[in-house]
Length: 233
Image (cartoon, rainbow, N blue to C red; front, side, top):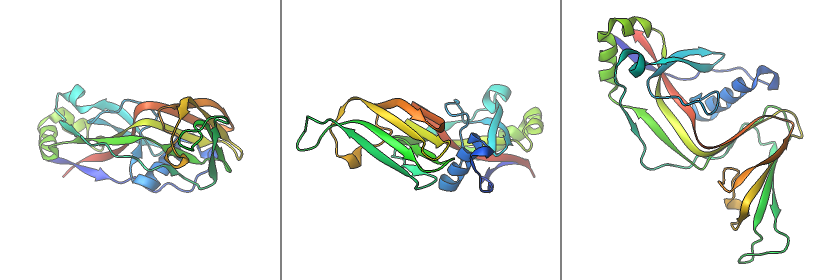
């Protein structure tokens, strides 16, 4: 009988910009959360997807439910939690653009924001909230795969998506060179203290950038996943 065994991302050697944006991103996710990144960003990964690793990045080849009619029941967190802002280097700073004439309770509204990077290949991630899709009934899934001769054969050694962390109002930036900048503009002035304004604030959007290798902003997207490998005893 086969079974799915959780996989921890393997160590990736120290990388620089020339190793490629996906590997830089995977290294950052692995270092901070011990998970595999969802790449390309915005790809709609699902519980039960199976595939292989290429360069440390998960590449899906199919889905167990769709290809073998084997159910992969899941549960979703009912109470989202905030993701801490993460940067692979402290060599960045955030500056605010304030309304020069108006104050609200003694605070000048924020009309924009600039993130500046002092190095290449810095990975910056911020999001408002996150929640997990989690695979349920793993022992039952193991039995159902083992009882299906074709699935048991095809899935041997394959990696299977067990958990997916989805996030809202996601901002991901990877710098290309020292001096890289990303500017945000507020759709309406933000009347909050500076300490409460994050790049992932839904009222902010990209306005311009320079020396940036990759950037994306999304209302909701899969951010990272836990994988298991199907092995036969």
